[in-house]
Image 1 (cartoon, helix red, strand yellow):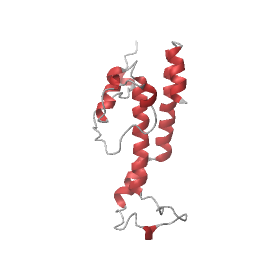
Image 2 (spheres, rainbow, N blue to C red):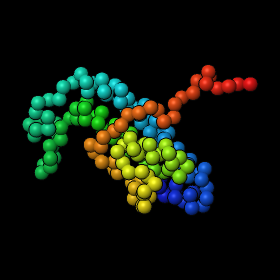
Image 3 (tube, rainbow, N blue to C red):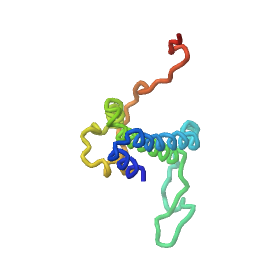
Image 4 (cartoon, one colour):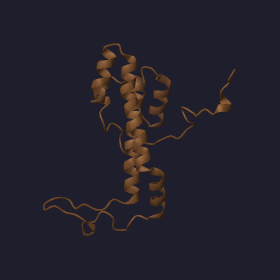
Length: 156
């Protein structure tokens, strides 16, 4: 119901309320990253070669009659899953933050190989989960929001 709450707040001219709903997604995504530990998954994925016969029916660990065999996900599968979920959450955050952070949101979309969020005509549809296509090229750049240290602050 994220978009519904966001839209209701925006329509009521409650911009801080709308942004607070997006911050909930930010907070949940941060927790997801901590819980999923993609750095540990990347290490496992680098150490574990893909099985030569990955995905074959003989490798199934579970099967329901008449269904496709299920195989145990590889470390590479787990890492890809976590990275996709994280990037999809970032895409939605950037989309919904676009009215107040247009340049940052456009940069996020650019790095995800997506069109500028300002071109979105159906925000409700665009904010649905699954809008980030698989296989997009991701551009890595400087942090959009670098951390400040005490040395960066001028205290009088």
